[in-house]
Amino acid sequence: METKPANNFLRLKIAEEIKSGVATEVVTRFPPEPNGYLHIGHASSICLNFGLAETFGGRCNLRFDDTNPEKESQEYIDAIQEDIKWLGFDWAGEVRFASSYFQQFYEWAVVLVEQGDAYVCDLNAEQAREYRGTLTEAGENSPFRDRSPEENLKLLSLMRAGEFAEGEKVLRAKIDMASPNMNLRDPILYRIRKVSHHQTGDEWPIYPTYDFAHGQEDAIEGVTHSICTLEFEGHRPLYNWLLEHLPVPSTPRQFEFGGLNLSYTITSKRKLKQLVDEDVVGGWDDPRMPTVSGMRRRGYTARAIRRFCEMIGVSRSEGVVDVAMLEHAIRDDLNENAPRAMCVLNPLKVVLTNYAEDQLEQLNAPCHPSREELGTRTLPFSRELYIDAEDFREEANKKFKRLVIGKRVRLRNAYVIEADEAIKDAAGNIVEVRARFIENTLGENPEDGIKPKGVIQWVSAAGGKRAKVKLYDRLFSDEGPDRGENNFLDHINADSLSVVEDAWIEPSLIKAAPEQIFQFEREGYFVADRVEHSEAAPIFNKTIGLRDTWNS
Ligand code: ATP
Ligand code: MG
Image (cartoon, helix red, strand yellow):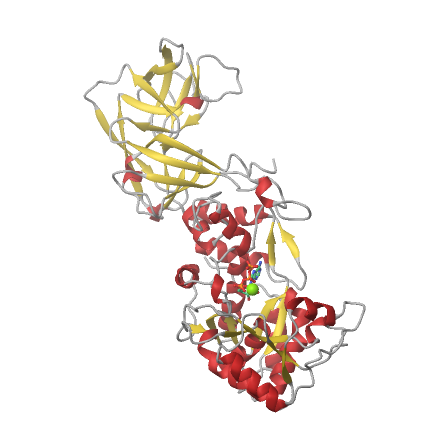
């Protein structure tokens, strides 16, 4: 069940624009820089951009904003495309690259120079900072500001030819060194960078800045609504200035919204990369990562992520969304859609002394408590079975509604049993429980009127299998791991991963396909690992518990 898109301020604004004729079509774009994997913040931007195009019958482009070659790579380009498709979106036409417009950008730089709107400046970074002024003080004109267009053209072509060293010269727009908007104080348009580019190789020794690229890319592609996060609000006058001073084929407009911040979560590619590079996690797709591929491996569904993005909406200001909302969306989705199964994480053998050794029953259980169409599964029942060690005590008070010596419990979807004796090893550890099954208790209470205290999960020794289960929890133990003075590396949750080597799973789980998600009854939601799971060596990841244990 897909929820109908809620109204957000951008959707309302665009609807008005269409009504009044300000906009006649809606073309958006998602413009990732291929310098890392997509995270939950990007997912929200994807839902917004693709969602708006869908709502208004327009289109959304995927464009790699690849103007910083040293941090970019093909691995990221591939992963980003896979993640967008997995989220359920499809871009219009071919994948686009800012780098495929480099020649056009250069020709437009020439146009600006010829118009006297740009100049080559020799100030080094430190000098440029001094000339730039501050928020309260106007800047000063660069001594190179009045170079003639002819001289600038010559210098620009030498920059392009690779004749200067990095940092020796830049191309700057000639706008206003006294502007209260620092972005308009003769911003840099081109820098010399002698690095190979993943798309253009060694063709370019100069690369455009974000500011000189973004609006022009939008214009080339006919983007109508260029949506970005709030930090670019101050760049909008520059975005418009460039479009006004260049012979661009269309006039896109920039709109800002407050990007997503999530509690207990980091949404910065740079910091996420650090977690990967420093082996704090197993990789970009580690199930604890807030990356799209990490969430996928964790068992978060694309549907639930989309629903979460819809639920939190889009706001005009920056705020922090409680990660519990995301977790809630995941639980909701999985509760509705995940088939049920049984897994014993900490197996304790139970021997039913009154059940014949050669007897084997095939019991049936529904895969879902309320969705019959998900079918049934077969549970072998035999003399030896496993329950969770946590579910047994030799003695306990009344609050313990599980198995106790002399007391009864129901095995989920099976018989009621009564415990007689705990068998211990030399060290005093309980290694086995002797119990009896109570006849005629399939779906019925015992005839003698002594009811079981509770229901526990179990898996028959016959037909079950050993599995590895990775238990995940939030990666950070602090609500704002990188807020304020916090160094996020100091707030890693030491219990974010624990591995159970020998859980015991029921037969329906043995055939699980990678990425298939189940509710392990009474334990939570678990997914067959996308990378490492196989029938021969099953591996499940804990997606999330049945209840929120952080706010209780
Ligand atoms: P990061 O800070 O993680 O590196 P970024 O903004 O540099 O993110 P880009 O690849 O430039 O990453 O982002 C692609 C698109 O995703 C941009 O349009 C950007 O506005 C949007 N985006 C990035 N982070 C968020 C976020 N936290 N919430 C919403 N949108 C985001
Ligand atoms: Mg960016």
